[in-house]
Amino acid sequence: MIPRIKEILPLENYLLRVVFSDGKAVVYDVKEDMEQIESYRLLRTLPGLFQQVALDESKTCIYWNDEIDLPSDILYEYGKQIPAR
Image 1 (tube, rainbow, N blue to C red):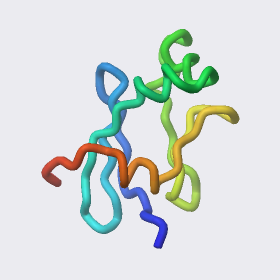
Image 2: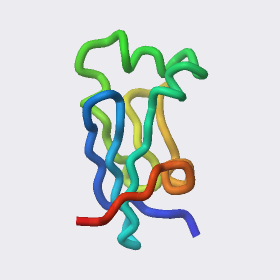
Image 3: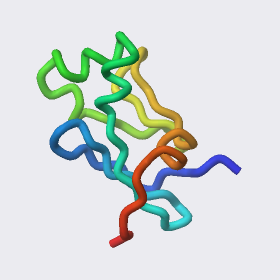
Image 4: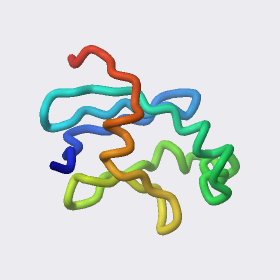
């Protein structure tokens, strides 16, 4: 089953707080992606872009533009689990 995202919140220092429909909450660090994937570097160089993160209609992917996105299963698996609110 593909995890569905219920809530996404951009935090300081290129961190994302993500809550999934099953109640799991994680913090995902985007900095490593920015170092490894060239298109992700725009998140650092374009002012305000990181804060414009959006959730797609299926709730299985977040995105910033046509070139920068993250599927929910990556966020679910590699995010650091935190207590749900």
